[in-house]
Image 1 (cartoon, helix red, strand yellow):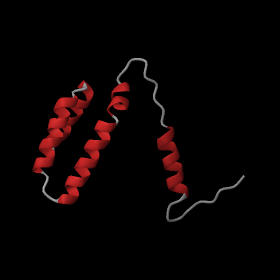
Image 2 (cartoon, rainbow, N blue to C red; image 1 turned 135 degrees about the horizontal axis):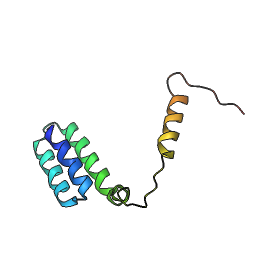
Image 3 (cartoon, rainbow, N blue to C red; image 1 turned 45 degrees about the horizontal axis):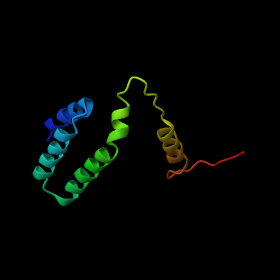
Image 4 (cartoon, one colour; image 1 turned 90 degrees about the horizontal axis):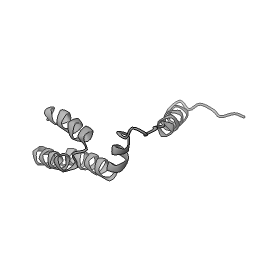
Length: 88
C-alpha cells in the first residue's frame, strides 16, 4: 500500500489521531499474511502509545536529543559479529 505512507505522514504532522487509527485499520484489513499483520499492529501500537512524545516535537519550545540513537549505534558497532574491545 504505497499510498498509505503519504497519508500517514500527513496525519502525524497534523496531529490527526482519529484518521491515523482509521488508516491503520484499513492497512490491517488489506494485509493478508499473519506475519505482516503483526508488523503493522506493532507499528500502530508503537505510534499510538508514543503519541504524546511524537506530538511534542511539533511545539515551538521543543528541544530534541539523540542520545538513544547514539548509544544504540555505539553498542551495535561494539557488540557486532566483529566486536571491538573496551579500554580505560
